[in-house]
Amino acid sequence: MLILRQCGFRIPGVFQIVFNEISAAELSGLDTLEQLELMDEFRVGKEDLSNLGDGTRFGKIERDGRVLYRFRAKDYRFYFEVKEDSVIVHRVLHKGTFSDFLFRSKMPLAEDEALAGSKHFWKLIDEGRNARRL
Image (tube, rainbow, N blue to C red; front, top):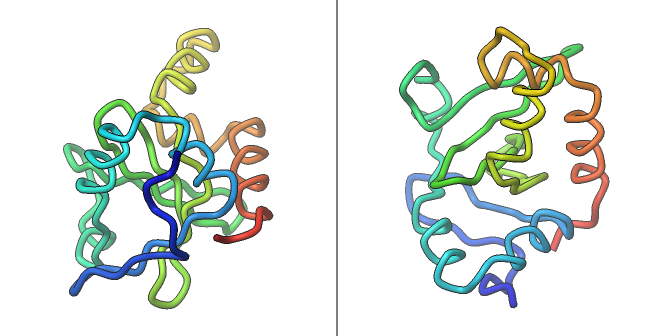
């Protein structure tokens, strides 16, 4: 059961977080305590997105002019885009989802770089992008 039942929530100094049907379902598939822990960690401010780099929980994925951000929390990755003052979460995926992919394909790239070139990854994101927002 998804603990977050409203369209989004706002914390002063950070973007409003909006989940679509797919990302909400992925989050709701986790046990309640894990959902609470992940949501407690998932904060996105403008300064977070301007200070991307190694060692941060945030990453940036670009392809064909499309920009997507990644946030690491525990063993999960939130993939989102920013529109105006909102963070639109397209997918919430376990890190193993793509770690296995990277291992099998033997790509000598960082996770974000490898994902940027993966058609399968962008298909997952497009499914999320096209899903109805809750």
